[in-house]
View 1 (cartoon, rainbow, N blue to C red):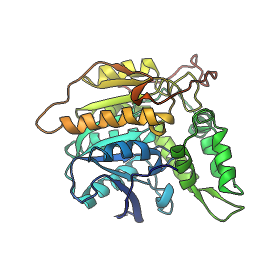
View 2: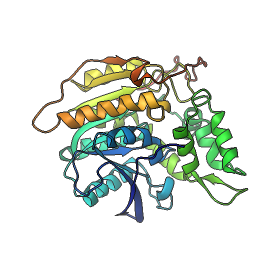
View 3: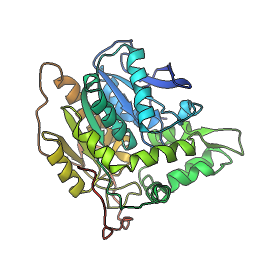
Length: 343
């Protein structure tokens, strides 16, 4: 059984109703240092449970909302979109009484915190982007719905499926290439939390219309490039060398990262070795590496500047935890004409 660091749930008033926010660490309103963690497009706060556990052990408060249309916040209505999430996160900071926080996001969450920091730089004590946040190369005229289907695959398909039991839902995820060799109690906890409904007709809590609305913003490479280029220092990028299906083509290519380094001087770039897009936050070794970078930022903000480093790579043996690689074929077409978001 996974050890869940989250001990309290806040109910934060936002447009349309209550947003649920999980709390790990010291857990007192106004407590510092404070990290605001934001999950991905079809996830929940439980996808960040492992980094939260490591940070709580360091007496760092970690707030992790279920975004609008996900988890316990699934009942919140639209309009959706990344700017709606930014407004919700501002409400979370206000509810907690926090002037600033270290902002960290995984996948889509990275795009959200980049927008928040760019729009409200005074509320950012540092930004940690985890396998996301950089403008994605999108070919002109791309059908965003089809692009989401191609990128998310079974993570999106499951939103239209029913499952007879929690065991059936676990089996569905066990077959996902990202988890086939790395199932764990933490992954199981993340999967179980996502279920809702009666036995025989269980479904994911995630609202598909929210995913599709957010996905349109996510694929707006111009907006993403503008946001991340405006994020105030310190900025850290952690990335996985493999993609959502554990394929050897990562979400963030070396070319994309090179462009980001030019657009965001001083950005610290950390390649977390031998992992994929999901396990960078759900794997024990990888999440420890992510938490260590977040803790480094929390310890360095204030009167002290975070030291910048051009790039680094974390070995496959951090904390001594095992890892396993796969070798599936890339799913992207590198020959298509693509459009950069850096302008």
